[in-house]
Length: 364
Ligand code: IPM
Ligand code: MG
Image 1 (cartoon, rainbow, N blue to C red):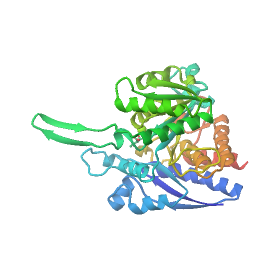
Image 2: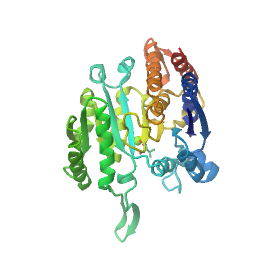
Image 3: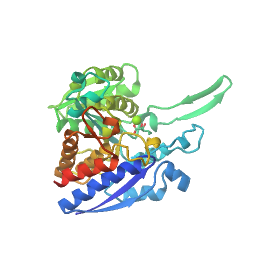
Image 4: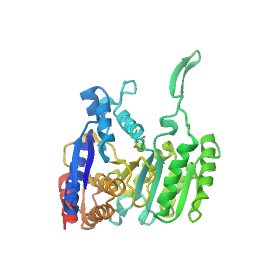
């Protein structure tokens, strides 16, 4: 088969980690007899400096015409001024909305070799492995009204946590489908004791749950969930939640894994089901870390495992996805690490060498 992949390295360490993911992807494609055509584009700060916009229409179109999008990271301190007209992050939001990527999967996995790399007791984090299903194109990020204005008594601002029935339904279905393929347990996270949008959310979750009688459903309030993530992460399996809650909880949960450089993500335009290929965008959850750019320091693992998610969900190459994930685990088990996951007795390597090691395990 021939696949076309839109590659948007973005800012900071984005290009560093993308280079390694492409290395691995080329080898996987060659081994499995597929052709991959890479189309490169700009997003984020680099696109602002080149085109004056964080995502050009041409780049969006190129992504729409590809089988999947692989993205590095966006963001640069040069564009951090809240007064600025455009921000690198606008590019990311425009991609999510423009490509209809409503379902964001963020798996959290504590690799056995990294249990001593966190701020938590090893016995608390050991074995934790769960996934967030985060709604990505609704809620506070996109709801209207969204504005600032002046009144005689000072400035005011509003963001709207707006959700339609259809928006909730489709993300909740993704939650149930993912739960179906894992431990058959779904936790829906909301704030139904206070928010109207959460009350509608909970009602719809209950309605959809009728279609999935074999899935055990639990509702959890978002504040209690924040506590549960660090108190008893081993209890969690699949969590489905709205955009802002998912943003905050997934950063919190990333700390269990020892480094943000370990966590991948997939943003999908449909409900994943066995045997169906879905358009998606794949990126590490870490940011652009400008101070590490080009120093051969950044950890490429999250980008490589994001690419594995792309193989699984958008290209239908499940076996190849598993091979990449196994290769990552094998390299870690051999004691190799990048600076962010350094530990006693481990062998520290740079970005490029980590990529080479993973390639050699995939190839061997
Ligand atoms: C994320 C990021 C983004 C978000 C920012 C960069 C817009 O924090 O992907 O979690 O808030 O969704
Ligand atoms: Mg975030």
